[in-house]
Length: 63
Image (cartoon, rainbow, N blue to C red; front, side, top):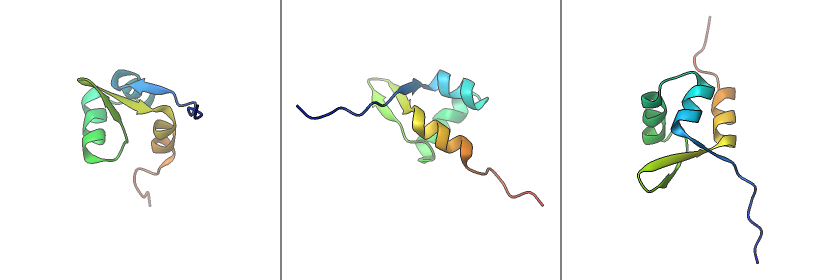
């Protein structure tokens, strides 16, 4: 049997809380392709590693 990678998925609400943005902002990021997500029925799940990477990216140049 093949190995299943140990990936933790977060709900949109959990991602919004971690990133300190609204759920709508998370949905916009998912639909724009800025944040990878998997759809389970009518809801989305985002890999925890993708959230960590998004938080490390610079948002804007300052200066």
